Length: 331
Image (cartoon, rainbow, N blue to C red; front, side, top):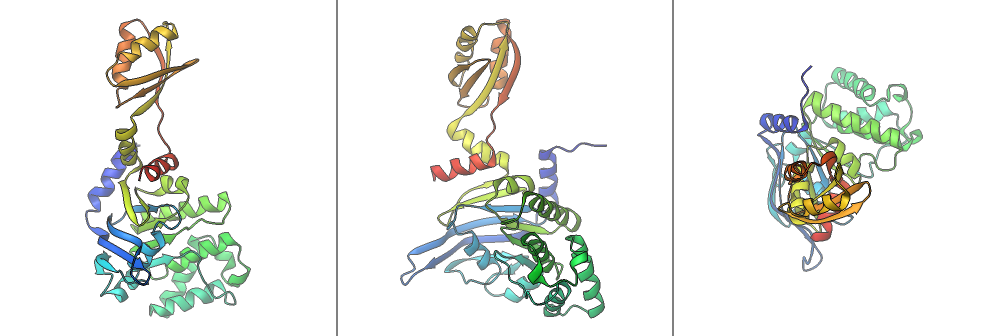
């Protein structure tokens, strides 16, 4: 079986998805009498068809405001945008036909059953009755709610409501799916189930997913690319590795190093002489190395020349959570 690396998978996604699913050009939204509160400030985004795109930022960053403009619930102060090729100002009806939305919080008719709720939403899209009933049953099976099909939504747990919300967002078979905090308030097992559902939908049906979340673990697991926004401004966009590169350029690289056959103090002096190395600290049995750029190979060669045997040379990669905090702090 062929093993495909993350980089190859990313390249394949981009190759087959050259067409844009979402695009914004200087999209802005201001509030207040004199429009001095800039919730979204000249936002330029390009989301490719078929990818899972993460949209993250602290509270008040402008995430929900952006999403509301993209689905036609808020009119921009300035700028423009397209979703599924349709203009967010002039073709809102078309956008609503092409998109599914899971808002936070999601609202349902608690006194109706899951079947009745989905039947109501299906009628809004004028779906044929026979097709509608099949689709309702298939969707509830997909999200693991077949046994609750005739149970009133009011009796659903938080996790069940989240999964039902995903079924509701898919009733019109959208090409673009907007998810706002899809796993908030549910337990780890339910959250993982939701993530798996999102990944499977993206792969099996090529649905473009625009996901806003506070869970960096979630975003790192399921998103192909990520945009970081704060105070309405776009700070960075790219894959997790792209974001690591941005931070590396500013802060350098940190290595953990273990060397045998050379005493630690001697190893420190050898490593310090390698071009780019800024600092070396002994934390027995390892050395912590800070360099201006990636130079692990050069460090290894320098130690090998003097008879050192490397048992560990590992870059300390930042998690998305740490990358996020670094980028926000420097903004």
